[in-house]
Amino acid sequence: MMDIKALAYGEKEYITALRRHFHAHPELGRHEVETTKRITEELEKMGIEAMTFSDITGCIGVIRGGHDGGTVALRADIDALPIQEADLTKEYASQNAGVMHACGHDCHTAMLLGAAKILSAHREEIHGTVKLLFQMAEEIGTESRHYVENGSLSDVDAIFGMHIWATLDAGKVNFEDGERMACSDRFTVKIKGKAAHGSEPDKGADAVVAAAAVVMGLQTLVSRRTDPQNTFVLTVGMMNGGTQSNIIAEEVELVGTTRTFNKKFRKGLPDMIKAAAEGIAEGYGCEAESTYFFGPAPLVNEHISLNRIARRAAAAVMGEKALVPMEKEMGAEDFAVYMETIPGVFGFLGGRNMEKGICCVHHHPAFDVDEDVFPDGAAIYAKFAIDCLKEMEKQKIL
Image 1 (cartoon, helix red, strand yellow):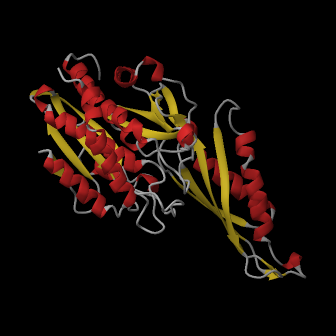
Image 2 (tube, rainbow, N blue to C red; image 1 turned 180 degrees about the vertical axis):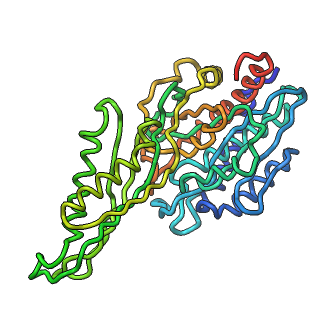
């Protein structure tokens, strides 16, 4: 019987070196060509079949166990962000100007490769198949759908994801039931009025004034159109329009985002925004046209048996006291796309260490992670896969 924790700590140097390589050579979403190449090279060294794709980046490693059984997927995202790293004196600082791993995806990739090394060396003990999904473009939104649409995950019975977390201390981990991350949808509203000279506003229909009213009016969807116990955020982040300071604007475009955990409520948002915008604009003699784009769905840990397996795996590696509660996040995660079709669980691994000065939030130019947590992350990946497949064999889940 393999000691997964001991094996993972034996790979600490390997995992850390890989993380530093990926951190130094970040690539933006959909363009992770060299990152994908390095991942496949590492998988092939381990004797793991690597599936690549002609139309997308990222890859999938396939480990077939020594015994028949189900299929579990372990996911790591591989893309970086368009951010200039603050400290270029670090040994592993980004070498690509304006691009940085400021969210921890380099850590996920390295930890999953560490888990791959453990699992591939002990494949005879695996009851089923483990798929290692190295996903492109998480930061873009819903690009995870490509791996679903191309059938790469059609045989997967359960999927596991984990994110290094900047506001959770190193040595802590969270796999909680229920709502964990919100959706991230986008909408636009185009207000169409009538141009006129600023000295004769009565001759026109002011799209700027109407747009301002729409911005304020949309906030009543939060304060007056939803259950106060339903968490909902609506933000208009952009207002574009007008040509001159003394001309009544003919057209203004508003661009915003909505966040909620409530899947049913979310479905009604396009109609609510449309009705509110049109009604308000009409009151100012203008017209409004709205469009709505559904991004990643709310991420909800609904599969209690998988949540239990994840917590048990984390406790086996880090101890029961490492499991802590954590507030749900209004940020989004496109792992939710997988969970719309595949039973799954998603959790958070602490990466903050105040004593080491590692305390910056995600997407910050000075973001970093306590590298001492990497073996724990790799071990949790591997332990979850082994335990989940055994539970499937016993027909206790799914």
